[in-house]
Length: 179
Image (cartoon, rainbow, N blue to C red):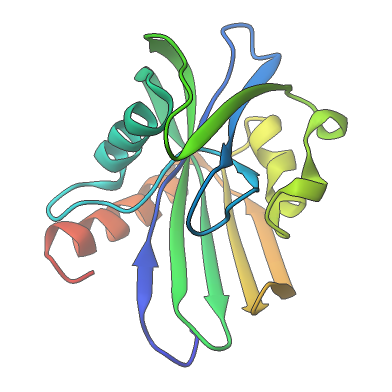
């Protein structure tokens, strides 16, 4: 854990096309990660589970409503100077509504393969966990950062049950108001 001892919780949500050949990313227009391509998402509101947060944030940032989605993995990001981040990543396989640019995000479809992702315009650790996301392999990824630089990482493929246990612990903390 970083020296601050503080943990921040965020969600990341990635819609896939109905045939799975494309993914929808958003270019951040302001705030943390401005100018970078990423999934949609943000911070949970008080009393909100991470799944509900992911659903709400996708709607707010892209205009679409996820009708089928599941947790695909979790990113544990520790920074030597803190704060640390715990970030569940959700895969959306069905949605309704029209994709729209918002004040925060500019959406764009990319091919769902390693050579189609704009890694040079994504967070530094993206190329380390996206292979699992693209392969639909549940994962738990742990990173140690010093500022923007990745000092170490460990990305492990896990079963859905293990992933569920991680999510249960995060939701317990959030619902108990301990975040």
